[in-house]
Length: 305
Image (cartoon, rainbow, N blue to C red):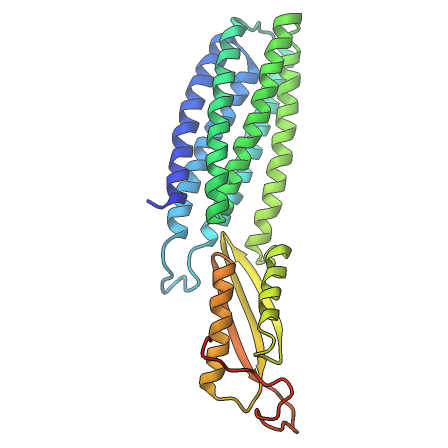
């Protein structure tokens, strides 16, 4: 089990525990905000399970049907996660409407407070762990999972404030009102996640900061090439695909041209994690080329390449 799949498995376990204790507590004290939080945790179980199997699939090596690998399974899992998050928000809206038009008294508020405080502590630890693994492995799906739990921390804090207000004022209407606010925030977060994942699925460019880093690496090797052009990038899950055309002096040997391209590819893979780069070599088109010995920008072929 890799660090990414292990993180997803731990996420499933923690979400299951939190869902059970929140749902039982919410039903016992008749609090919609606590039940809403339990529903969110149930959605966490579903999404974390999808993430777990998506990560296992994405780590499979390329095969005949998927020569570029299975990395988009991560993006698909994140897309499904965003839809499920939206559905959970819609359900909370529905429950809030029912409580506005119905009745019900929250009982034993102290029990709800204790459970929500315990839930926040556990969620903070889990979020820290997921963010650490996501950063280390550059995993989109784990970043999405961590984001979901960060939202849980905020919403659970809101729930605690709601229960305290109800305890002090006795105003039951604050329960569905806060639930609506939570649902709105859930929709907003899901929409942001959805937009990010769609960009990956339609092969948008890698992040601008990563692309700038890539160009900086290519510029470090400018003494070896005349120019580079037709630079194209895309991202699938945590995998970054790069291809470009590299113009070299037409008088150098094929062996030296390969050495230059190979050196650049190695450096890119070293500095940009999970990158897959393909370089197409082109000869210069200068008809009056004086030859490599007299070329003003001749590549300096060295053993270190």
